[in-house]
Image (cartoon, rainbow, N blue to C red; front, side, top):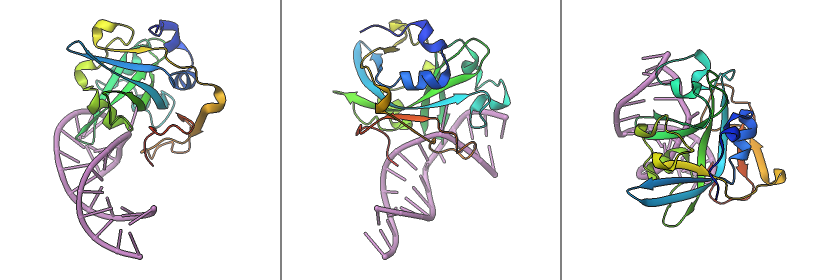
Length: 180
DNA sequence: GATAAGATGTTA
DNA sequence: AACATCTTATCA
């Protein structure tokens, strides 16, 4: 299937968070491919108190300010990495947290943002990597069409700031969404 | 089932 | 000190 084009990442972040549902995330490790379909996302924008970039540009958040289509990978809780798809124009800080994948064999254990990064061996070496370039080892493709009535919207998980924002999206009845 | 605690390192 | 998490233990 086709690699997601640049324009895909330059739309409204919330729209992109929904559009990413049903897309495939593919990781190439030593010419072995691991893939899964995105089933759960969360949107983070610069005007959002829960967004890492809310307080401005720092070394950590710099990737979020790049033009959409690259990865923002950060380390959390001393053990896990989480991966975002950066969205929007250059100098606007926004991204979409990938929270869960429906694994395609032999991939497994991808029902959570920390778990999927562990399974796909996503770490800071992939920070700022171009998600439209297969040579980067991590990229996105169009996979399945998800109709609007299959998308459930809820509040986000694991945050205290702006906890009431309805910016978490997942595919209805999909068993690979992260646990409550 | 539910809730609590612990692991652990980076960030601001 | 808080943290965009997860696993294990300890209840009931």
